[in-house]
Image (tube, rainbow, N blue to C red):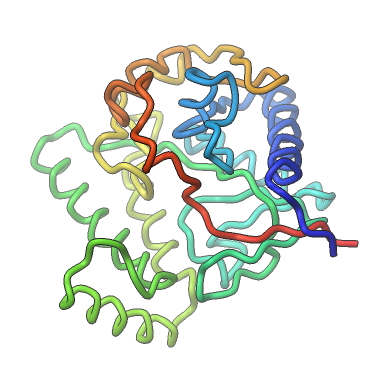
Length: 268
C-alpha cells in the first residue's frame, strides 16, 4: 500500500466529486457543494486551506437515486450507507474510491472504508412551531446517542457525561453499529422534501441552523472549485450565513486546523 499525503488525498476526493458530478448531470439530479466545501468554494475558490474533505447535499429523492445509480455500477466507486453496510454507523452516505483504504480515529471499524466524499440528504422540517421544536429536540437526542456508538469521548463534556458516554459506548457494542443511524434516517424522512416548505440536513450537522426554504434547490449554478467547475445552490449566501454568520471572515488562527484524524492509502 502507498500512503497518501494531503495533496494525494485531495486529488482522489476531486476525482470522486467529478464522478458524482457526471452522474448527476447525466440523470438530472440536483446536487450542490455544502458546508465547508461550499464555504471554501465561495471564500477560497476551492478547499479551505486547512480542510481535508468534500461535502455535498441533495434533496432526499435525488440522494436516494444517486445511491442507487452508484451501487448499480459496481465499478471503482462504491457507496456506504447505514442501510447497505451493518458496520457503517453514520446516518449519511459516503461515496468511496474502492482502490483506497482509510484508517480513521473511530474505535469501531467500517468495512469497505476508503477515501470518500460525504453525501447528505435534505429532508423536510415541520412547519408547525410546536412540532418543529419537538422534532429538533428528538433529532438532537438521537444524534447524540448515535455519536456514542463510535466516540468514547467528546470535547467539553462534564465528568458525569463522560461516564455516561463511556457506558453507552460499551452498551451499543452489543448491537449492530448501524442501528441508530437507520433510526435517524426514518425520523428525518417523516417530512418529505417535496411536501415541505422548509428543509434541512436534519440527521447530522448544524441542527436548526441548517433550515432553509425548499426553494433553495430551485436554482443551481456552476461554481468554480480548484481547477474544476461543480454545482452549487444559487442562494448560497443565506445558507452560509445561517450556518457560519459572517462567513467571509477567517476564523482565529487556533481554529484553522483540520477536523479529521486519519491515514489514507492507495491499494496496490
